[in-house]
Figure 1 (tube, rainbow over the protein chains, first blue to last red):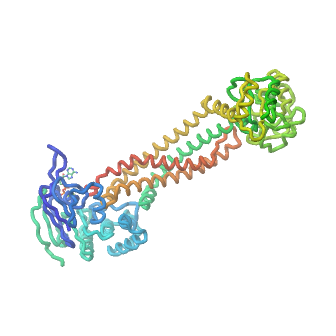
Figure 2: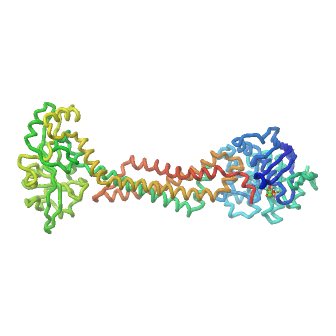
Figure 3: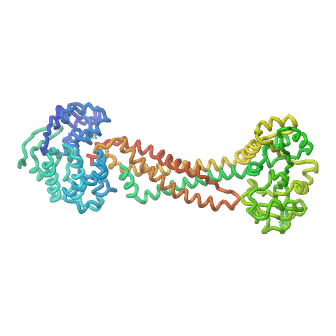
Length: 230
Length: 376
Ligand SMILES: Nc1ncnc2c1ncn2[C@@H]1O[C@H](COP(=O)(O)OP(=O)(O)O)[C@@H](O)[C@H]1O
Ligand SMILES: [Mg+2]
């Protein structure tokens, strides 16, 4: 699904240069849940951004479904993102003027669904994250956990093969954090979607098929999840 | 995308209100100033435009219609000798004093025309009739100037140049660009009022009508050689010359046009600033949109749609205000004209203004690095 080889990323130049990634190899298979762990500043977000075609690598290879994207021109990247990825952010990044329903519909419309189709699918997705009765609410009326569930519905909208989440539980209390992770992994599994989650939260590791640790821009260990879900 | 534009716009109502006030203010200013300008164009030479003459034979090099000087009546026979000429009427336009009942004096412009042909006579007579000007010492004025001239009804008698002037009718909407109203009367009567300026054997203009099918230019070419020491202007030339003088040479037109341009600048600046502030406020959302895979084209559409919606809403309010003011100005001395072309043109201008004002916002939004979304 994703195949990353010998990836380097350097921010800035000369004496101000920061070597965020130094020769990373990383793979994600279809349908698996991978947790990416590591201390702050180790390069997790950088790796996730490059994987999601949001950031360009300094060198190395990034293949998505066998297609090299590291060398794609800038103009092609939005299309790749739209087709392959759903994103979940630490700060939710919902559109504050749109209701929960409209937030999900927006993604579907971006992906070319008709208004009617978008309405139907968004309704279904909100039902799956247990928020049907909040569909007409603005994000400001929702709790953190509810917002992140809307974000999950949005990330799943249009069925992208890969969901990328950067610290999705960091802004939540532990109970809603667990709840969100549970929902995310369950829905991803049901639909056979791959999920890469950057996290600090060791209590959510149980949801992983595989845990990858990164430190100082290098992968230092990869192990199986504690509780392998088939 | 349109939903997002619409919802974002209405999400922050205070900002929307500020934007709309800016747009409305600018558009009303533009409409008023431009309407005033059109009003100037219309009134400055109305007397020429509606004269019905094909040619004006004048003393040499007069600057505008209100600045004519007497010429000899004998020229009339020379012009009449031209086969293409149907008729030639003597015409007077002269500045004379009007005495109110209070004893106060107002300057007026007496218009003496040939009652038989009606060329150069009043139009839009709403009370009394032009035919009544056959009576002795009779005049017609416009109802707009009733209070200025101290007139309230038909039959009242005033003094022009010390001679009787009896009101026999009122016109509607014949404004004078200057402060001196027009007073219509027979040519003969005007000679009396203008005595001391114009002799019995003179006229200020000769108004020429050509035979059917003869163009004004052909007529002019035929008439000019007969009166080489005089100027011959087509009605259109006289119209333009007079308009140019009053509207441009006096600076009145330039001032109003400048006001309109100023309105446009104010509008662009205010709208640009509020749209820009809104874009900056929504920068994270635009970043998210981009991260999710929206192209720059999608982002343009959101910003432009917001600008266009603001423009249309502002325009709707502005045109309503402007039409009301324009309506109210019709009875006054400086009418504000808003023909449909101007109303439609202003809508286009409003859209262009708002969209033009979004350019910097679009530049800002398209430079957003989507990677920002993962940073705190
Ligand atoms: N835009 C940037 N410009 C310069 N340095 C950056 C930028 N983004 C991240 N870095 C640096 O790259 C390193 C890795 O950052 P990041 O990928 O955000 O790590 P993590 O997500 O694991 O905390 C850090 O040292 C960070 O300061
Ligand atoms: Mg990070």
